[in-house]
Amino acid sequence: MAVGMLVQAPGVNAEGYDSIMQHLEWETKPKPQGFVSHYAGPTGDGWLVFDIWESQDDFERFSEERLFPAMQAAFGEVPDMSPKFIPIHNQDHA
Image 1 (cartoon, rainbow, N blue to C red):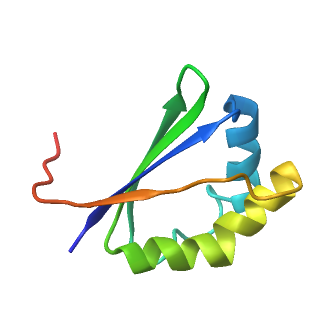
Image 2: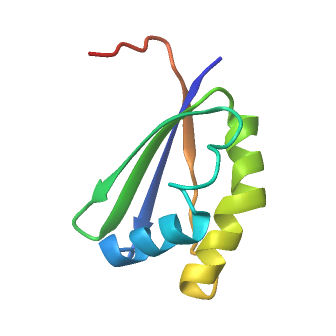
């Protein structure tokens, strides 16, 4: 079952987010197994990311293999983040 993944990253700005995406080589490497869609933008105190994944396991594997190393390369450490997952009951596209 598909899941939505929501994470808030206090203190992260557009420059930090773009650096992570660059270290992920998001535009040039194949998308990770189970990835469906990605949305991100600024909040009052940082950055918010909302993804759709085929499963929570797919996101967790991606985190370990690619996301955490990219975050460490961008920031020198992996910022504290506690993703929240919700089962997708309905998904509609324009």
